[in-house]
Amino acid sequence: MKNLKYIILAVLSLSIASSCSKFEDFNTNPDVPTTVSPDMLATQILKDTYRFWNPNQYDFSTANLWCKHTAILQTNPNPYQYYYSYWPYGGFDSYKKLTDLKRMVEFAKGSQAESSFQGLALFLKASYGLGMTLDMGDVPYSEAGKAEEGITKPKYDKQADVFVEVLADFKAAEELFAAGKNFDGDIMLGGDATKWRKLCNAMQLKVLQTISKKITAEQKNRFVAIVTANNLMTGNDDNFQLQYSENSNSTHPFWNGEDMRIYVGVSNLVVDELKRLKDRRLFYFAEPAESLIAGGKLESDFDAYEGVPTEVSAEQLALNNQSGKYSLLNKRYVQNKAGDPMIKFTYAEQCFIIAESIEEGWVTGNAKDYYENGVKAMLRYYMNLPSAASGTHGMAITQAYIDNYFTGAAAYATNGTKTDRLHQIWKQRWLIDFFQGNGLNYSEFLRTGYPEFPLDPATSMNPDDKKIYPKRWKYPTSEQVTNPENYQKAIDDQFGGYDGINEIPWWLK
Image: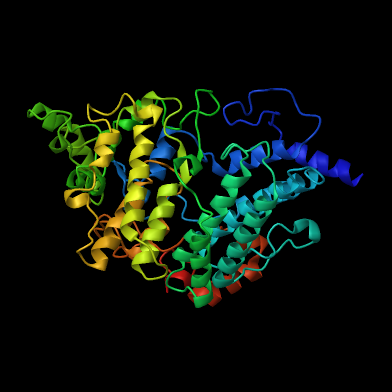
């Protein structure tokens, strides 16, 4: 009866699932499954975790505003562009998947891939906890997902403890993948246990660097040990990403979104930086400004591109757009059903993490090599991206271009200051997430303060203080009803009883 109960619960949670394991095939079979396997659960959970939450053009364009890669050029100001939100709350919905993860592990028991499914469950739990604590501060973690054990009002763990537990779970997941086999149902890395193991190690590096203001000597030693062991990502083939397809259930969220694209401009932060570096990603990201083309510029000229100042009022931006002043988003984003994959973590980001750690003296090595390897990886990524083949404005990235990239402003500032070099690393890391809609890396901006995001108090929509950047999201309002004592304790302990978006969490103090 116990097993039957679990099967029924899992079937309910997979009400539209099919036995297909690929993202492009998922949900195309109308037949209702009569049995549940761990790979079916893995597919559904990964899809629910990493697919963009609401795949339409407006929401996807909104999701890209927070880190100042793009701007909306409509008269109605979008709060995400001006430091607020339509819904300024975090959430614990991801924890609902923990029950299905338990079922996945139970159904894998006795199989050759049992250890890998256990590793996947721990990796996802750690990922959920990491995202939530960066969003809100103290969050439930040690008691999360234990409703079946009678814990329906989980305590909020201190943020410092959450980071410790997340790191422990990523480490344990790596060990489980090391003992595991390749498995089915994986739409992210093709069930390759070796790639998952590398990712678990890389994610530990990311978490440790995220808490660089609070990191302990022991944690630095852990960082060094991971880098020294060198069981890490080795190239773009190891990138953790969700690939879209031609299938109607898994197309890129911005495909066929021309009615929105004409109101999405590329920010001057992006355009000016790529022009300064003579970086051809500019021609992959943007269209030339109509007014500059009319003035005689060619689409292959760097000077034919003009970025949007994201802090200017919506009304003024809309007027400027009508006169063709700005470079809009590249047309390729609405022309390709498959489009660019949703990047979650890349080999390039790993390179930039290690380059920074060398500059900070955490580990020994050549920061220049890591910096250059990271940049080259992203340039090769776009060079080999099928969806970009027809949208390069005659300035395609080639291997010869990559080989000669590191000249002028793009050359690593070996003879400059440490700050100069860190700025180069941080800028390149920021560019990875252009128009990804993937949650982005706003936490990196909060940690480093770079690149410098423009903020104008006259247009800021921050309700508590228009002169500062938000540091977090509020806790979901449901917690005040379903878990009031733990909620109140969390905001009392951290923020003096006020659950506000400008309150500073532990990791930033």
